[in-house]
Image (tube, rainbow over all chains, first blue to last red; front, side):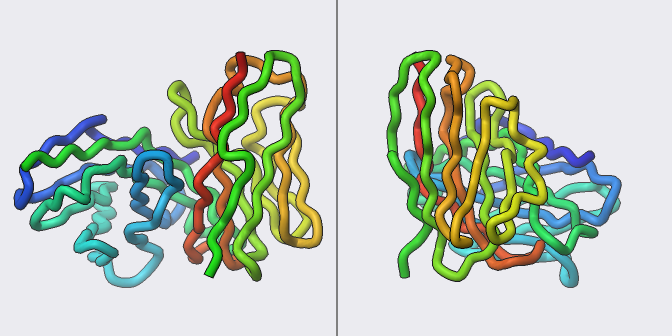
Length: 116
Length: 114
């Protein structure tokens, strides 16, 4: 079975400060890892993903994440927060050995609050 | 191009009634997923379609829940004899076939059972 833990249901930062959202996963098979963002009353949008290859992945809106197998982590970072980054962020894992489809297991989400 | 659309956007129903939720995937996407987002359970996988067949329906919470997909396109999620615990946002996503392709999510249907 796979699971995801997101530390901190809420994270508050000031505009221009570093954003760090934590994600740890548990998986008995090679994981595929994802970060999604959800704005109010909207669906989820993919920020970035790790499947294979380079462990530092860059996504949209200046976000990046690093897959660290030894720490079973996939933390999301952004050097400088914008007010528009305020949203809910979800980390997700799927079974990387299953090439047929992508059954996502989500964390509980972290709400990012950005103050001026 | 057009994204994933879902209808209705909001649905209020009385306990015990049946409801149907619709998902129109992106044209050409053969994979279609349903998820449920609720306060108590977070985001949960419900069912996956490849074309018109459902190889994985392991997330459906009870036999009151069913889904079908026709013509490799539109999908309908049906909940019979709704209960208050069915209140949630039901999200649909579609993608190209395969485990590495991005899932594109619709805006969801907010279901409230009174």
